[in-house]
Image (tube, rainbow, N blue to C red; front, side, top):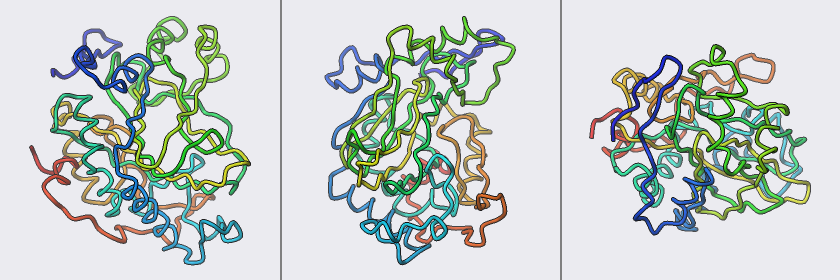
Amino acid sequence: MATATVTASTRVYSPFKLSTSTSTEDWLDQLETQGYAVVKGAIPPDRAQYYQQKAIEWLQSFDPALDPNDPSTWKNANLPFQTDRNTYEHYSVVHEKFMWEARQEPGVLEAFARIWGTEELLVSFDSLNVTLPNLKTARAPWPHIDQAPRKRGLHCVQGIINLSHAGPEDGSLVVIPGSSNLVEEFFDTKTDPSTWDWKDNRYFDDKDMEFFTSRGLKPKKVLAEPGDLILWDSRTIHWGGEPTEKSNTTRTVIYAAYAPTKLASEDALAEKKHIFEVWGATTHWPHDNIRLRDLQARLPDGTPDPRHRSEPVEKPKATEQLLRLAGVMAY
C-alpha cells in the first residue's frame, strides 16, 4: 500500500480501499458501505469479563469503597476526573497492563490486519471509558468526525473493544450510517476550504446536520455484547451515546485504533516513542496526528489533581509485540 500523497494544495488523497471483493466477511462490506461494523466475539467472553473487572479495580484504586452494584458508592469526588465525554486518559491509565493486554488480543489484531492487509500495525494510546449508569445528567449528542477535511478517502479506522452489554437503553457508540460517503461532498459544497486545517476533528452543528438528514441519514446506536469489536471509518459522523434512566449497565470499553506502521513518518514514530516513554496518551490516530495529551491530571477547575500518577499501577510487559505496536521497535 502506498502512502497518501498531496495532489492538491487543499487536499490529501489516500489510495487505500477496503479489499472486499473476495472477502466472505460481512463486516468488511458493512464497514465500507455504511462506515461502521461490529466484529462479533473478537475477544472470548471470559477475557472481556477479566478486562472489565480490571477496569473496575483501577477505579477502586482511587476509591476502595466503590461498588459498581451499589449506586450509593458512586461519588464523583472520590473518582478520578473524567472529561465531559466519559473517558479516562490521564493517570497513565492508557498504559496499564490490562489496557495493553486488550490491545494485543488476537481477535482484535486479526480484524485490523484484515482491514489493512498487513500484520505490521501500530496502535493508538487511547482512552478507557467506564460510565456508571445514572451517575450524572446525560450529555447531548456531539456529532463529529475524526478526520481533517483536507484528508480524502479512508485514512483511519477507529475501534472500541466492547467489554459490557450495549443494548438499546445502555451507553454505546452512535453513528450516522452512510455519512462517511458524504462528508467530502459536504465540505466541498457547504464549507470554505480556506477554513480547513489539519486537525483530525470536526464538529457538526444542527445546520450542518441538515445536509445529511435531508438525504435520509439518521442516527443509529450500535448494539454489542462483551467481547465484540466495534469499528468505524473516521469519516463517519458519530458520538458517544448516553445510557437512559432504564439502564443499569456499567458501560466499559477500551478505545483502540490500528494502522500500518509504514504509513507513519519518521517524525511521527519518534514522537510516538517519546509519548510511550512518558506513559502518555495520544489521539485516536495510531500513525498520524501524533501529539501528547496533557500528562497532568486536572480537576474540573483546572488545578492539578493531587492524585496524579506519572506511571501505571501495573506496568505492561514490554514484549516485542507490544513495542512494535507502540512504534518503539521496528518490524
